[in-house]
Length: 125
View 1 (cartoon, rainbow, N blue to C red):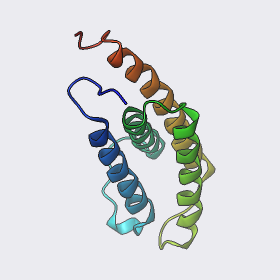
View 2 (cartoon, helix red, strand yellow; view 1 turned 135 degrees about the vertical axis):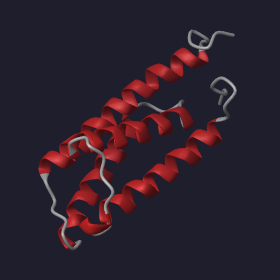
View 3 (cartoon, one colour; view 1 turned 90 degrees about the horizontal axis):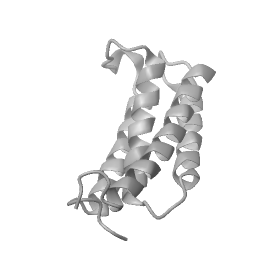
View 4 (cartoon, rainbow, N blue to C red; view 1 turned 120 degrees about the vertical axis):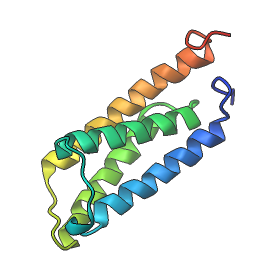
């Protein structure tokens, strides 16, 4: 698997798995432990899943985008349903939709970015 610029794919993989841990933690902590941004919650979901998917694609860039995006969509569903049992949390379809959309967009965008980086069209060689 070729490197992307000066970064080895293992670093992207490690960062992606750390993001998954953060997604689980932030999804399943009680509401009063949360630290929120000024963005609407759905934007936070989309950005978090988009970034995670992008890191996975850069770490496993030989795989089709859907093999990264769909498992993250499933993770979003599991985490959202799991919130039914967390004090002060609620499961909402709109949050799942935002997470899933972010995962798919991140996987597609990461695929394009990885191809451009490998071909040297970004950060030229």
